[in-house]
View 1 (cartoon, rainbow, N blue to C red):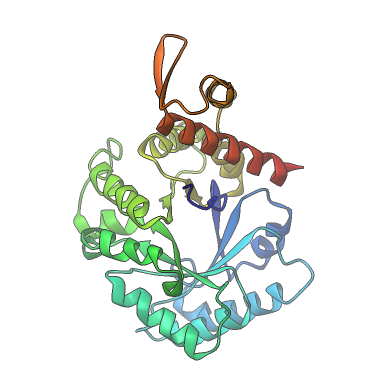
View 2: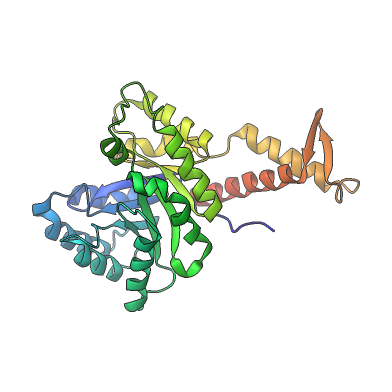
Length: 296
């Protein structure tokens, strides 16, 4: 039995809620989702004004048509409660919780949404950006199996992970990779999507391309972005290639032949192809159709 088709989250752009110009630009961008940020991208003295600016923008006619997510400050902190109430009222697709370190962080936010009679369509995303978050990623992601918990996505906070662990990324992300793979494994076990962290130097497209290729090879569904110039490369990197689509079509067509319809294993171009490869091929084609529908 196939899992439900996941939402497209190839390119997920952070936009500071304090930046009015950036807010207005979002309605014309081709990213799959926007995270309107009330947390790290907003200075303490601008928190209240940013909240009001975001409220006015999302209530207006320029509200983007893509998936909308609002990242709030910690519910235990000074600004978290007001952020949470504002985000709830603005009817985003999801609220992104910072520094999630265990299942209780998700369950407490879910309880708060239930207490305010939030619709079940309002989901929760979790930033995994601390050592405890990584260690508890499996238990956090397991909540994705419970629709009542609202969790649908894990987001890697790579900058905070570097800060919290003192690892070096001067020569690349090699020391981060085991933790990122742990997040992917947790997400697959919990049936939630998982997004790679940001690439800080948006003026280095080669470095960004390498990170996208690396993330896709690890199994990430997409990448979080800090600049609109990163949208098109991310969309391309996390989409099936022509070769992958052609191979998937060949596998589906071969299994559809009368003599193969009930076989568990077939031979195609000298390779053994199992039913699990058929399921993978069908997933590739479904994603390709999803992208085509979005772009038309």
